[in-house]
Image (cartoon, rainbow over all chains, first blue to last red; front, side, top):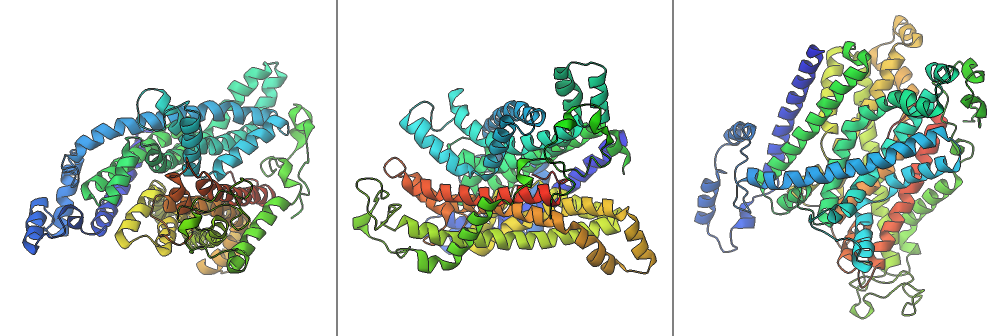
Length: 306
Length: 308
Protein backbone atom coordinates (compact mmCIF):
# COMPACT_ATOMS: atom_id res chain seq x y z
CA UNK A 1 0.00 0.00 0.00
CA UNK A 2 2.80 2.40 0.90
CA UNK A 3 4.47 1.56 -2.39
CA UNK A 4 1.29 2.35 -4.24
CA UNK A 5 0.92 5.72 -2.52
CA UNK A 6 4.56 6.55 -3.22
CA UNK A 7 4.35 5.85 -6.95
CA UNK A 8 1.05 7.58 -7.25
CA UNK A 9 2.53 10.65 -5.54
CA UNK A 10 5.50 10.58 -7.88
CA UNK A 11 3.17 10.50 -10.88
CA UNK A 12 1.26 13.50 -9.58
CA UNK A 13 4.48 15.45 -9.12
CA UNK A 14 5.63 14.68 -12.67
CA UNK A 15 2.27 15.74 -14.06
CA UNK A 16 2.47 18.99 -12.10
CA UNK A 17 6.01 19.64 -13.36
CA UNK A 18 4.87 19.24 -16.98
CA UNK A 19 1.93 21.47 -16.28
CA UNK A 20 4.11 24.19 -14.78
CA UNK A 21 6.12 24.38 -18.01
CA UNK A 22 2.96 24.55 -20.11
CA UNK A 23 1.52 27.27 -17.89
CA UNK A 24 4.73 29.26 -17.99
CA UNK A 25 4.90 29.12 -21.78
CA UNK A 26 1.20 29.92 -22.22
CA UNK A 27 1.32 32.79 -19.77
CA UNK A 28 4.27 34.26 -21.70
CA UNK A 29 2.31 33.80 -24.89
CA UNK A 30 -0.63 35.96 -23.81
CA UNK A 31 0.95 39.08 -25.23
CA UNK A 32 3.01 41.81 -23.68
CA UNK A 33 1.55 42.88 -20.34
CA UNK A 34 3.31 46.21 -20.60
CA UNK A 35 0.78 47.33 -23.21
CA UNK A 36 -1.85 47.01 -20.53
CA UNK A 37 -0.11 48.83 -17.68
CA UNK A 38 1.86 51.59 -19.37
CA UNK A 39 0.09 54.67 -20.75
CA UNK A 40 -0.41 55.04 -24.50
CA UNK A 41 2.32 57.64 -24.87
CA UNK A 42 5.03 55.71 -22.99
CA UNK A 43 8.48 55.89 -24.60
CA UNK A 44 10.82 53.03 -25.52
CA UNK A 45 12.81 53.88 -22.40
CA UNK A 46 9.76 53.57 -20.17
CA UNK A 47 9.15 50.12 -21.64
CA UNK A 48 12.74 49.04 -21.01
CA UNK A 49 12.63 50.29 -17.43
CA UNK A 50 9.35 48.61 -16.69
CA UNK A 51 10.61 45.39 -18.25
CA UNK A 52 13.73 45.43 -16.08
CA UNK A 53 11.70 46.31 -12.99
CA UNK A 54 9.33 43.36 -13.52
CA UNK A 55 12.16 40.97 -14.42
CA UNK A 56 10.75 40.37 -17.90
CA UNK A 57 14.10 41.14 -19.61
CA UNK A 58 15.84 37.99 -18.33
CA UNK A 59 16.17 34.79 -20.42
CA UNK A 60 13.08 32.58 -20.34
CA UNK A 61 14.89 29.67 -18.67
CA UNK A 62 16.02 31.91 -15.81
CA UNK A 63 12.54 33.31 -15.47
CA UNK A 64 11.11 29.79 -15.38
CA UNK A 65 13.56 28.47 -12.78
CA UNK A 66 13.11 31.41 -10.47
CA UNK A 67 9.36 31.08 -10.95
CA UNK A 68 9.36 27.41 -9.93
CA UNK A 69 11.78 27.97 -7.07
CA UNK A 70 9.61 30.66 -5.57
CA UNK A 71 6.31 28.97 -6.44
CA UNK A 72 7.27 25.96 -4.32
CA UNK A 73 7.54 28.22 -1.30
CA UNK A 74 4.20 29.84 -2.10
CA UNK A 75 5.66 33.02 -3.55
CA UNK A 76 4.13 33.81 -6.92
CA UNK A 77 5.50 37.33 -7.23
CA UNK A 78 3.40 40.46 -7.46
CA UNK A 79 0.24 40.90 -9.43
CA UNK A 80 1.08 43.24 -12.29
CA UNK A 81 -2.32 44.86 -12.18
CA UNK A 82 -3.15 44.93 -8.45
CA UNK A 83 0.53 45.60 -7.52
CA UNK A 84 0.15 43.26 -4.56
CA UNK A 85 1.70 39.85 -3.81
CA UNK A 86 -0.25 37.16 -5.69
CA UNK A 87 -0.05 34.93 -2.62
CA UNK A 88 -2.13 37.53 -0.76
CA UNK A 89 -4.77 37.51 -3.50
CA UNK A 90 -4.81 33.72 -3.41
CA UNK A 91 -5.23 33.68 0.34
CA UNK A 92 -8.20 36.03 0.00
CA UNK A 93 -9.87 34.24 -2.86
CA UNK A 94 -9.14 30.56 -2.29
CA UNK A 95 -11.29 30.17 0.85
CA UNK A 96 -14.26 31.69 -0.98
CA UNK A 97 -13.87 29.25 -3.85
CA UNK A 98 -13.46 26.28 -1.53
CA UNK A 99 -16.51 27.29 0.48
CA UNK A 100 -18.58 27.60 -2.67
CA UNK A 101 -17.29 24.28 -4.03
CA UNK A 102 -18.00 22.55 -0.71
CA UNK A 103 -21.50 23.96 -0.64
CA UNK A 104 -22.14 22.94 -4.27
CA UNK A 105 -20.75 19.48 -3.59
CA UNK A 106 -23.00 18.98 -0.54
CA UNK A 107 -26.00 20.17 -2.53
CA UNK A 108 -25.27 17.70 -5.30
CA UNK A 109 -24.62 14.84 -2.87
CA UNK A 110 -27.86 15.58 -1.04
CA UNK A 111 -29.80 15.44 -4.30
CA UNK A 112 -27.87 12.77 -6.21
CA UNK A 113 -27.82 10.10 -3.50
CA UNK A 114 -31.48 9.67 -2.69
CA UNK A 115 -32.44 10.24 -6.32
CA UNK A 116 -29.93 7.78 -7.76
CA UNK A 117 -30.74 5.04 -5.26
CA UNK A 118 -34.50 5.50 -5.55
CA UNK A 119 -34.31 5.50 -9.35
CA UNK A 120 -32.56 2.12 -9.28
CA UNK A 121 -34.84 0.60 -6.65
CA UNK A 122 -38.00 1.83 -8.36
CA UNK A 123 -36.66 1.13 -11.83
CA UNK A 124 -39.12 1.94 -14.62
CA UNK A 125 -41.49 3.91 -12.41
CA UNK A 126 -42.28 7.59 -12.47
CA UNK A 127 -39.54 8.31 -9.92
CA UNK A 128 -37.03 6.68 -12.21
CA UNK A 129 -38.19 8.67 -15.21
CA UNK A 130 -38.14 11.90 -13.21
CA UNK A 131 -34.57 11.13 -12.11
CA UNK A 132 -33.52 10.45 -15.70
CA UNK A 133 -35.04 13.77 -16.71
CA UNK A 134 -33.10 15.58 -13.99
CA UNK A 135 -29.94 13.87 -15.18
CA UNK A 136 -30.32 14.65 -18.85
CA UNK A 137 -31.41 18.23 -18.15
CA UNK A 138 -28.42 18.67 -15.87
CA UNK A 139 -26.12 17.77 -18.72
CA UNK A 140 -27.93 19.83 -21.33
CA UNK A 141 -28.53 23.14 -19.58
CA UNK A 142 -25.86 25.75 -20.24
CA UNK A 143 -24.70 26.78 -16.74
CA UNK A 144 -24.21 30.43 -17.53
CA UNK A 145 -27.67 30.73 -19.00
CA UNK A 146 -29.23 29.14 -15.94
CA UNK A 147 -27.21 31.55 -13.83
CA UNK A 148 -28.43 34.59 -15.74
CA UNK A 149 -32.05 33.47 -15.68
CA UNK A 150 -31.82 32.79 -11.93
CA UNK A 151 -30.25 36.17 -11.26
CA UNK A 152 -33.01 37.90 -13.22
CA UNK A 153 -36.01 36.03 -11.85
CA UNK A 154 -35.12 34.83 -8.34
CA UNK A 155 -32.85 37.71 -7.38
CA UNK A 156 -34.14 40.49 -9.64
CA UNK A 157 -37.92 40.19 -10.03
CA UNK A 158 -38.78 38.17 -6.93
CA UNK A 159 -35.99 39.65 -4.76
CA UNK A 160 -35.78 36.40 -2.79
CA UNK A 161 -32.02 36.02 -2.84
CA UNK A 162 -29.02 38.27 -3.44
CA UNK A 163 -27.78 38.41 -7.03
CA UNK A 164 -24.09 38.40 -6.27
CA UNK A 165 -21.30 38.79 -3.77
CA UNK A 166 -20.44 36.49 -0.89
CA UNK A 167 -22.22 37.87 2.15
CA UNK A 168 -24.08 35.49 4.40
CA UNK A 169 -25.66 32.13 3.70
CA UNK A 170 -28.30 33.43 1.29
CA UNK A 171 -25.64 34.46 -1.20
CA UNK A 172 -24.47 30.83 -1.45
CA UNK A 173 -27.81 29.50 -2.62
CA UNK A 174 -27.90 30.62 -6.26
CA UNK A 175 -24.26 30.02 -7.23
CA UNK A 176 -24.17 26.82 -5.17
CA UNK A 177 -27.16 25.27 -6.91
CA UNK A 178 -26.02 26.44 -10.32
CA UNK A 179 -22.61 24.89 -9.76
CA UNK A 180 -23.92 21.69 -8.20
CA UNK A 181 -26.54 21.06 -10.87
CA UNK A 182 -24.16 19.62 -13.45
CA UNK A 183 -22.47 17.30 -10.98
CA UNK A 184 -25.82 15.95 -9.78
CA UNK A 185 -26.55 14.60 -13.24
CA UNK A 186 -23.39 12.56 -13.67
CA UNK A 187 -23.27 11.33 -10.10
CA UNK A 188 -26.88 10.26 -10.12
CA UNK A 189 -26.45 8.29 -13.31
CA UNK A 190 -23.40 6.45 -12.04
CA UNK A 191 -25.16 5.66 -8.80
CA UNK A 192 -28.25 4.41 -10.58
CA UNK A 193 -26.43 2.09 -12.95
CA UNK A 194 -24.13 0.92 -10.14
CA UNK A 195 -27.11 0.18 -7.91
CA UNK A 196 -28.92 -1.67 -10.70
CA UNK A 197 -25.94 -3.92 -11.19
CA UNK A 198 -25.36 -4.53 -7.48
CA UNK A 199 -29.03 -5.12 -6.66
CA UNK A 200 -28.94 -7.93 -9.16
CA UNK A 201 -25.93 -9.63 -7.56
CA UNK A 202 -25.77 -12.88 -5.63
CA UNK A 203 -24.84 -11.39 -2.30
CA UNK A 204 -27.76 -9.00 -2.31
CA UNK A 205 -30.04 -11.94 -3.06
CA UNK A 206 -28.46 -13.83 -0.20
CA UNK A 207 -29.02 -10.92 2.15
CA UNK A 208 -32.66 -10.82 1.12
CA UNK A 209 -32.99 -14.58 1.54
CA UNK A 210 -31.54 -14.33 5.01
CA UNK A 211 -34.35 -11.94 5.81
CA UNK A 212 -32.38 -8.71 6.10
CA UNK A 213 -34.77 -5.76 5.97
CA UNK A 214 -35.14 -4.40 2.44
CA UNK A 215 -34.18 -0.91 3.57
CA UNK A 216 -30.94 -2.22 5.00
CA UNK A 217 -30.22 -4.29 1.89
CA UNK A 218 -30.55 -1.22 -0.31
CA UNK A 219 -28.94 1.48 1.80
CA UNK A 220 -26.17 -0.55 3.42
CA UNK A 221 -25.31 -3.71 1.49
CA UNK A 222 -25.96 -2.50 -2.04
CA UNK A 223 -25.05 1.16 -1.73
CA UNK A 224 -21.61 0.37 -0.36
CA UNK A 225 -20.59 -1.39 -3.55
CA UNK A 226 -22.47 0.90 -5.89
CA UNK A 227 -20.31 3.70 -4.50
CA UNK A 228 -17.11 2.38 -6.07
CA UNK A 229 -17.71 3.85 -9.55
CA UNK A 230 -18.83 7.12 -7.96
CA UNK A 231 -15.57 7.34 -5.99
CA UNK A 232 -13.60 6.61 -9.18
CA UNK A 233 -15.17 9.55 -10.92
CA UNK A 234 -14.99 11.92 -7.94
CA UNK A 235 -11.72 13.39 -9.25
CA UNK A 236 -13.22 14.13 -12.66
CA UNK A 237 -16.27 15.71 -11.02
CA UNK A 238 -13.98 17.92 -9.07
CA UNK A 239 -12.19 19.08 -12.24
CA UNK A 240 -15.58 19.78 -13.81
CA UNK A 241 -16.61 21.75 -10.74
CA UNK A 242 -13.48 23.89 -10.97
CA UNK A 243 -14.08 24.57 -14.66
CA UNK A 244 -17.73 25.44 -14.18
CA UNK A 245 -16.78 27.69 -11.28
CA UNK A 246 -15.02 30.16 -13.62
CA UNK A 247 -18.29 30.87 -15.41
CA UNK A 248 -20.48 30.77 -12.30
CA UNK A 249 -18.18 33.04 -10.29
CA UNK A 250 -18.06 35.51 -13.16
CA UNK A 251 -21.85 35.70 -13.45
CA UNK A 252 -22.53 35.90 -9.72
CA UNK A 253 -19.60 38.24 -8.99
CA UNK A 254 -18.27 35.67 -6.53
CA UNK A 255 -14.86 36.75 -5.17
CA UNK A 256 -13.17 33.41 -5.79
CA UNK A 257 -10.35 31.90 -7.84
CA UNK A 258 -12.44 31.55 -10.99
CA UNK A 259 -13.21 35.23 -11.01
CA UNK A 260 -9.55 35.98 -10.29
CA UNK A 261 -8.52 33.83 -13.26
CA UNK A 262 -10.98 35.56 -15.58
CA UNK A 263 -9.83 39.02 -14.48
CA UNK A 264 -6.20 37.92 -14.66
CA UNK A 265 -6.54 36.72 -18.22
CA UNK A 266 -8.45 39.75 -19.47
CA UNK A 267 -5.77 42.04 -18.05
CA UNK A 268 -2.85 39.75 -19.00
CA UNK A 269 -1.65 39.48 -15.44
CA UNK A 270 1.02 36.72 -15.82
CA UNK A 271 1.75 36.04 -12.16
CA UNK A 272 -1.93 35.78 -11.34
CA UNK A 273 -2.67 33.40 -14.22
CA UNK A 274 0.26 31.17 -13.30
CA UNK A 275 -0.67 31.12 -9.65
CA UNK A 276 -4.35 30.36 -10.26
CA UNK A 277 -3.75 27.63 -12.82
CA UNK A 278 -1.02 25.99 -10.74
CA UNK A 279 -2.86 26.14 -7.45
CA UNK A 280 -5.97 24.78 -9.16
CA UNK A 281 -3.90 21.98 -10.66
CA UNK A 282 -2.31 21.19 -7.29
CA UNK A 283 -5.74 20.99 -5.67
CA UNK A 284 -7.13 18.82 -8.46
CA UNK A 285 -4.05 16.57 -8.32
CA UNK A 286 -4.30 16.28 -4.53
CA UNK A 287 -7.97 15.37 -4.74
CA UNK A 288 -7.20 12.79 -7.42
CA UNK A 289 -4.42 11.35 -5.31
CA UNK A 290 -6.70 11.01 -2.28
CA UNK A 291 -9.40 9.46 -4.46
CA UNK A 292 -6.97 6.90 -5.87
CA UNK A 293 -5.68 5.96 -2.44
CA UNK A 294 -9.20 5.72 -1.11
CA UNK A 295 -10.08 3.60 -4.09
CA UNK A 296 -7.13 1.29 -3.45
CA UNK A 297 -8.31 0.88 0.14
CA UNK A 298 -11.87 0.04 -0.90
CA UNK A 299 -10.91 -2.18 -3.80
CA UNK A 300 -7.66 -4.13 -3.28
CA UNK A 301 -7.57 -5.25 -6.93
CA UNK A 302 -6.33 -1.79 -7.91
CA UNK A 303 -3.37 -1.96 -5.54
CA UNK A 304 -1.95 -5.10 -7.09
CA UNK A 305 -2.67 -4.30 -10.70
CA UNK A 306 0.61 -2.57 -11.33
CA UNK B 1 -29.36 -3.16 -33.85
CA UNK B 2 -32.44 -4.81 -32.37
CA UNK B 3 -32.80 -5.20 -28.67
CA UNK B 4 -33.04 -8.97 -29.00
CA UNK B 5 -31.93 -10.66 -25.85
CA UNK B 6 -32.55 -7.61 -23.75
CA UNK B 7 -35.18 -8.38 -21.20
CA UNK B 8 -37.78 -5.72 -21.84
CA UNK B 9 -39.29 -4.97 -18.54
CA UNK B 10 -38.23 -7.54 -16.10
CA UNK B 11 -40.14 -7.58 -12.84
CA UNK B 12 -38.70 -11.01 -12.13
CA UNK B 13 -35.23 -9.62 -11.60
CA UNK B 14 -36.32 -8.08 -8.33
CA UNK B 15 -37.32 -11.50 -7.03
CA UNK B 16 -34.36 -13.20 -5.44
CA UNK B 17 -34.56 -16.69 -6.85
CA UNK B 18 -35.76 -16.64 -10.41
CA UNK B 19 -33.25 -14.35 -12.04
CA UNK B 20 -30.12 -16.06 -10.83
CA UNK B 21 -30.18 -18.18 -13.98
CA UNK B 22 -29.21 -15.21 -16.14
CA UNK B 23 -25.72 -16.06 -17.33
CA UNK B 24 -24.63 -12.79 -18.78
CA UNK B 25 -25.54 -10.19 -16.24
CA UNK B 26 -22.80 -7.82 -17.19
CA UNK B 27 -23.82 -7.59 -20.81
CA UNK B 28 -27.40 -6.67 -20.10
CA UNK B 29 -28.36 -3.10 -20.76
CA UNK B 30 -30.16 -1.01 -18.24
CA UNK B 31 -33.67 -1.84 -19.26
CA UNK B 32 -34.50 1.84 -19.69
CA UNK B 33 -37.62 2.81 -21.55
CA UNK B 34 -35.57 4.39 -24.28
CA UNK B 35 -33.89 1.31 -25.63
CA UNK B 36 -37.14 0.14 -27.19
CA UNK B 37 -37.92 2.82 -29.71
CA UNK B 38 -35.86 4.93 -32.00
CA UNK B 39 -35.47 8.34 -30.38
CA UNK B 40 -37.54 10.01 -33.09
CA UNK B 41 -37.80 13.38 -31.37
CA UNK B 42 -34.06 13.73 -30.82
CA UNK B 43 -33.24 12.67 -34.35
CA UNK B 44 -35.76 15.11 -35.82
CA UNK B 45 -34.39 17.97 -33.72
CA UNK B 46 -30.87 17.20 -34.90
CA UNK B 47 -31.94 16.88 -38.54
CA UNK B 48 -33.84 20.18 -38.38
CA UNK B 49 -30.85 21.80 -36.71
CA UNK B 50 -28.46 20.56 -39.41
CA UNK B 51 -30.82 21.77 -42.15
CA UNK B 52 -31.14 25.16 -40.46
CA UNK B 53 -27.37 25.48 -40.30
CA UNK B 54 -26.99 24.57 -43.96
CA UNK B 55 -29.88 26.71 -45.19
CA UNK B 56 -29.54 29.67 -42.80
CA UNK B 57 -29.21 32.24 -45.63
CA UNK B 58 -32.42 31.01 -47.23
CA UNK B 59 -34.44 30.57 -44.05
CA UNK B 60 -33.66 33.69 -42.08
CA UNK B 61 -36.19 36.48 -42.60
CA UNK B 62 -33.63 39.29 -42.21
CA UNK B 63 -29.93 40.02 -42.45
CA UNK B 64 -28.46 38.95 -39.08
CA UNK B 65 -25.96 41.82 -39.21
CA UNK B 66 -28.32 44.60 -40.21
CA UNK B 67 -28.67 47.15 -37.43
CA UNK B 68 -31.53 49.56 -36.94
CA UNK B 69 -31.62 51.89 -33.99
CA UNK B 70 -35.30 52.53 -34.60
CA UNK B 71 -36.09 48.86 -34.05
CA UNK B 72 -34.09 48.33 -30.85
CA UNK B 73 -35.49 45.92 -28.23
CA UNK B 74 -38.60 44.95 -30.13
CA UNK B 75 -40.36 42.27 -28.07
CA UNK B 76 -41.42 38.92 -29.58
CA UNK B 77 -44.51 38.75 -31.75
CA UNK B 78 -46.97 37.68 -29.02
CA UNK B 79 -46.28 40.83 -27.05
CA UNK B 80 -48.60 43.64 -28.04
CA UNK B 81 -45.66 45.77 -29.13
CA UNK B 82 -44.22 42.93 -31.20
CA UNK B 83 -44.65 42.38 -34.92
CA UNK B 84 -44.25 39.57 -37.44
CA UNK B 85 -41.32 41.40 -38.94
CA UNK B 86 -39.25 40.20 -35.94
CA UNK B 87 -40.99 37.08 -34.58
CA UNK B 88 -38.53 36.69 -31.67
CA UNK B 89 -37.89 40.40 -31.22
CA UNK B 90 -34.71 42.38 -31.77
CA UNK B 91 -31.55 42.99 -29.74
CA UNK B 92 -29.71 46.06 -28.49
CA UNK B 93 -28.73 47.05 -32.03
CA UNK B 94 -32.10 46.31 -33.55
CA UNK B 95 -30.91 43.11 -35.21
CA UNK B 96 -33.47 40.39 -35.84
CA UNK B 97 -33.20 37.73 -33.11
CA UNK B 98 -34.67 34.89 -35.18
CA UNK B 99 -32.19 35.43 -38.01
CA UNK B 100 -29.29 35.60 -35.58
CA UNK B 101 -30.37 32.41 -33.86
CA UNK B 102 -30.69 30.62 -37.21
CA UNK B 103 -27.23 31.80 -38.29
CA UNK B 104 -25.82 30.98 -34.87
CA UNK B 105 -26.54 27.30 -35.44
CA UNK B 106 -23.67 27.25 -37.93
CA UNK B 107 -21.10 28.16 -35.29
CA UNK B 108 -22.42 25.71 -32.71
CA UNK B 109 -22.78 22.79 -35.10
CA UNK B 110 -19.42 23.32 -36.73
CA UNK B 111 -17.66 23.73 -33.38
CA UNK B 112 -19.32 20.61 -32.00
CA UNK B 113 -18.65 18.35 -34.95
CA UNK B 114 -15.15 19.51 -35.89
CA UNK B 115 -13.85 19.50 -32.31
CA UNK B 116 -15.24 16.09 -31.49
CA UNK B 117 -13.93 14.57 -34.73
CA UNK B 118 -10.40 15.83 -34.07
CA UNK B 119 -10.48 14.85 -30.40
CA UNK B 120 -11.93 11.41 -31.00
CA UNK B 121 -9.50 10.54 -33.79
CA UNK B 122 -6.49 11.57 -31.74
CA UNK B 123 -7.78 10.15 -28.46
CA UNK B 124 -8.76 6.83 -30.00
CA UNK B 125 -5.32 6.51 -31.61
CA UNK B 126 -3.60 7.13 -28.27
CA UNK B 127 -5.93 4.71 -26.49
CA UNK B 128 -5.36 1.99 -29.08
CA UNK B 129 -1.59 2.35 -28.97
CA UNK B 130 -1.46 2.49 -25.16
CA UNK B 131 -3.70 -0.54 -24.80
CA UNK B 132 -1.93 -2.55 -27.49
CA UNK B 133 1.64 -2.03 -26.34
CA UNK B 134 0.95 -1.85 -22.62
CA UNK B 135 3.90 -1.57 -20.22
CA UNK B 136 5.95 1.57 -20.33
CA UNK B 137 4.24 3.01 -23.41
CA UNK B 138 0.89 2.62 -21.67
CA UNK B 139 2.13 4.11 -18.39
CA UNK B 140 3.64 7.16 -20.11
CA UNK B 141 0.64 7.83 -22.32
CA UNK B 142 -1.78 7.43 -19.44
CA UNK B 143 0.16 9.87 -17.25
CA UNK B 144 -0.12 12.46 -20.00
CA UNK B 145 -3.80 11.60 -20.34
CA UNK B 146 -4.39 12.05 -16.61
CA UNK B 147 -2.55 15.35 -16.52
CA UNK B 148 -4.69 16.53 -19.44
CA UNK B 149 -7.93 15.42 -17.80
CA UNK B 150 -7.09 17.48 -14.73
CA UNK B 151 -6.70 20.69 -16.75
CA UNK B 152 -9.77 22.91 -16.81
CA UNK B 153 -10.81 23.34 -20.46
CA UNK B 154 -12.18 26.83 -20.04
CA UNK B 155 -8.99 28.11 -18.44
CA UNK B 156 -6.93 26.91 -21.39
CA UNK B 157 -9.37 28.36 -23.90
CA UNK B 158 -9.33 31.70 -22.11
CA UNK B 159 -5.54 31.77 -22.18
CA UNK B 160 -5.49 30.89 -25.90
CA UNK B 161 -8.15 33.46 -26.66
CA UNK B 162 -6.11 36.33 -25.24
CA UNK B 163 -2.89 34.89 -26.71
CA UNK B 164 -3.83 34.68 -30.34
CA UNK B 165 -7.14 36.48 -30.12
CA UNK B 166 -10.55 34.86 -29.96
CA UNK B 167 -11.47 32.90 -33.08
CA UNK B 168 -13.29 29.79 -34.19
CA UNK B 169 -10.03 27.90 -34.79
CA UNK B 170 -8.73 28.69 -31.31
CA UNK B 171 -11.91 27.51 -29.67
CA UNK B 172 -11.71 24.23 -31.57
CA UNK B 173 -8.03 23.76 -30.71
CA UNK B 174 -8.48 24.64 -27.03
CA UNK B 175 -11.31 22.18 -26.54
CA UNK B 176 -9.81 19.39 -28.65
CA UNK B 177 -6.46 19.62 -26.85
CA UNK B 178 -8.22 18.60 -23.63
CA UNK B 179 -11.09 16.49 -24.90
CA UNK B 180 -9.03 13.75 -26.55
CA UNK B 181 -7.99 12.45 -23.13
CA UNK B 182 -11.47 11.11 -22.39
CA UNK B 183 -11.43 9.03 -25.57
CA UNK B 184 -7.94 7.79 -24.83
CA UNK B 185 -8.98 6.62 -21.35
CA UNK B 186 -12.13 4.83 -22.39
CA UNK B 187 -10.72 3.24 -25.55
CA UNK B 188 -7.58 2.08 -23.75
CA UNK B 189 -9.72 0.39 -21.11
CA UNK B 190 -11.61 -1.47 -23.81
CA UNK B 191 -8.46 -2.45 -25.64
CA UNK B 192 -6.99 -3.91 -22.44
CA UNK B 193 -10.01 -6.19 -22.17
CA UNK B 194 -9.92 -7.09 -25.87
CA UNK B 195 -6.22 -7.96 -25.67
CA UNK B 196 -7.07 -10.78 -23.27
CA UNK B 197 -9.36 -12.42 -25.81
CA UNK B 198 -8.37 -15.34 -27.97
CA UNK B 199 -8.99 -13.78 -31.35
CA UNK B 200 -6.26 -11.21 -30.78
CA UNK B 201 -3.81 -13.93 -29.77
CA UNK B 202 -4.81 -15.92 -32.86
CA UNK B 203 -4.33 -12.93 -35.10
CA UNK B 204 -0.85 -12.43 -33.69
CA UNK B 205 0.02 -16.10 -34.03
CA UNK B 206 -1.14 -15.89 -37.64
CA UNK B 207 1.53 -13.24 -38.09
CA UNK B 208 -0.46 -10.02 -37.95
CA UNK B 209 1.68 -7.02 -37.09
CA UNK B 210 0.83 -4.19 -34.72
CA UNK B 211 -0.74 -2.03 -37.43
CA UNK B 212 -2.97 -4.83 -38.67
CA UNK B 213 -4.11 -5.93 -35.20
CA UNK B 214 -4.89 -2.35 -34.23
CA UNK B 215 -6.74 -1.33 -37.38
CA UNK B 216 -8.41 -4.61 -38.30
CA UNK B 217 -9.15 -6.19 -34.94
CA UNK B 218 -9.08 -3.64 -32.14
CA UNK B 219 -10.52 -0.55 -33.83
CA UNK B 220 -13.67 -2.25 -35.20
CA UNK B 221 -14.41 -3.60 -31.74
CA UNK B 222 -14.24 -0.16 -30.14
CA UNK B 223 -16.34 1.59 -32.80
CA UNK B 224 -19.60 1.26 -30.87
CA UNK B 225 -18.07 2.97 -27.87
CA UNK B 226 -16.63 5.68 -30.08
CA UNK B 227 -19.99 6.39 -31.70
CA UNK B 228 -21.66 6.70 -28.29
CA UNK B 229 -18.96 8.97 -26.87
CA UNK B 230 -18.91 11.17 -29.97
CA UNK B 231 -22.66 11.71 -29.82
CA UNK B 232 -22.64 12.50 -26.11
CA UNK B 233 -19.70 14.86 -26.45
CA UNK B 234 -21.06 16.93 -29.33
CA UNK B 235 -23.61 18.28 -26.86
CA UNK B 236 -20.90 18.94 -24.31
CA UNK B 237 -18.73 20.80 -26.81
CA UNK B 238 -21.66 22.95 -27.91
CA UNK B 239 -22.09 24.01 -24.28
CA UNK B 240 -18.37 24.68 -23.79
CA UNK B 241 -18.19 26.71 -27.02
CA UNK B 242 -21.21 28.72 -25.87
CA UNK B 243 -19.61 29.27 -22.44
CA UNK B 244 -16.46 30.56 -24.13
CA UNK B 245 -18.37 32.86 -26.46
CA UNK B 246 -20.26 34.03 -23.38
CA UNK B 247 -16.99 34.87 -21.60
CA UNK B 248 -15.81 36.71 -24.68
CA UNK B 249 -13.21 34.09 -25.54
CA UNK B 250 -15.14 32.37 -28.29
CA UNK B 251 -16.42 33.55 -31.62
CA UNK B 252 -15.81 37.33 -31.75
CA UNK B 253 -18.73 39.68 -32.52
CA UNK B 254 -20.58 40.55 -34.67
CA UNK B 255 -20.75 36.95 -35.90
CA UNK B 256 -23.95 35.47 -34.47
CA UNK B 257 -23.10 32.80 -31.89
CA UNK B 258 -25.56 31.65 -29.24
CA UNK B 259 -23.18 32.08 -26.34
CA UNK B 260 -22.25 35.65 -27.16
CA UNK B 261 -25.91 36.50 -27.79
CA UNK B 262 -26.70 35.41 -24.23
CA UNK B 263 -23.83 37.58 -22.99
CA UNK B 264 -25.13 40.59 -24.96
CA UNK B 265 -28.55 40.15 -23.42
CA UNK B 266 -27.23 39.81 -19.89
CA UNK B 267 -26.95 43.53 -19.17
CA UNK B 268 -30.36 44.33 -20.59
CA UNK B 269 -32.26 41.36 -19.20
CA UNK B 270 -34.48 43.53 -17.03
CA UNK B 271 -35.84 45.43 -20.02
CA UNK B 272 -35.46 42.80 -22.80
CA UNK B 273 -35.48 39.27 -21.40
CA UNK B 274 -35.82 37.68 -24.85
CA UNK B 275 -32.33 38.62 -25.98
CA UNK B 276 -30.74 36.17 -23.51
CA UNK B 277 -33.62 33.76 -23.18
CA UNK B 278 -34.11 32.40 -26.70
CA UNK B 279 -30.48 31.55 -27.55
CA UNK B 280 -30.25 29.65 -24.25
CA UNK B 281 -33.44 27.78 -25.01
CA UNK B 282 -32.09 26.73 -28.41
CA UNK B 283 -28.82 25.52 -26.85
CA UNK B 284 -30.82 23.50 -24.34
CA UNK B 285 -32.96 21.96 -27.07
CA UNK B 286 -30.07 20.96 -29.31
CA UNK B 287 -27.82 19.65 -26.53
CA UNK B 288 -30.75 17.75 -25.06
CA UNK B 289 -31.35 16.10 -28.44
CA UNK B 290 -27.72 15.02 -28.76
CA UNK B 291 -27.63 13.73 -25.18
CA UNK B 292 -30.85 11.74 -25.54
CA UNK B 293 -29.64 10.25 -28.80
CA UNK B 294 -26.31 9.42 -27.17
CA UNK B 295 -28.07 7.78 -24.22
CA UNK B 296 -30.16 5.71 -26.54
CA UNK B 297 -27.13 4.68 -28.58
CA UNK B 298 -25.32 3.69 -25.39
CA UNK B 299 -28.21 1.59 -24.14
CA UNK B 300 -28.46 -0.07 -27.53
CA UNK B 301 -24.85 -0.43 -28.64
CA UNK B 302 -22.78 -0.44 -25.54
CA UNK B 303 -24.62 -0.94 -22.27
CA UNK B 304 -21.42 -1.39 -20.32
CA UNK B 305 -20.28 2.13 -20.98
CA UNK B 306 -21.06 4.23 -17.95
CA UNK B 307 -19.35 7.31 -19.23
CA UNK B 308 -20.49 10.74 -18.14
